Image (cartoon, chains in turn yellow, cyan):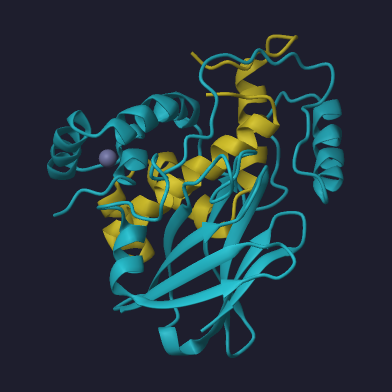
Length: 80
Length: 230
Ligand SMILES: [Zn+2]
């Protein structure tokens, strides 16, 4: 499923590090929108309420955040 | 309720509520772009599921991570300035598999129109401003529309080759900056020979249109692609 494997078998810890590192490379808005949605297990509508933004903006931000994140993960050798 | 192509991101992560989810599923059956994007984004859900919120800066590493890795991580961070491609720490074997990234939301046949995308909508109906940079040759059209939350912004960009990571920022009359959105330019570029399609991106800022003096397209690692006075 997840394509990262650590030589010593500590896959979960490594996965956390690689993803955390990539997330830190995102702009504040992009990191925020992923944090308030997928990472806190909220729908875009719930996140829109919390962020005080229209749902349309939250949805488009999620999209561009994912695109940016995928590039940052690729730079770290992770393809999805 | 309206369906946008960019809903594919929230759909892929399972973030849409029932009505929106059903509406998007209807849309995707007839949309080749979204079908292709969905394949590219499928792995992201698995990747992000179960990852808790991340600290904004150098937060603590999870338990059990070798100190070597954390040191390399800091070194990577320093080295990254000025370079766009970094490798992961040596000694950690990464097995890459599956689909590569880079599917862009562009019109396949070239030109600047993407019917139904939020960017195309603002570009068609908003107040437009154009600029060409004499050095980088990037051509940009910014369109803005006042919203209750501030300003909705669409950007159409051409004359750009990658690989680059770019950011659109609004520079306010007060001198402050607000980020609009961020995206990656693949090597083949946008709006250049061999890759005619333009890039269109969409975002919003909290400031009203009148508070903005210009929009800048910035390059990660330093530099500016084009500046659009408004
Ligand atoms: Zn679509």
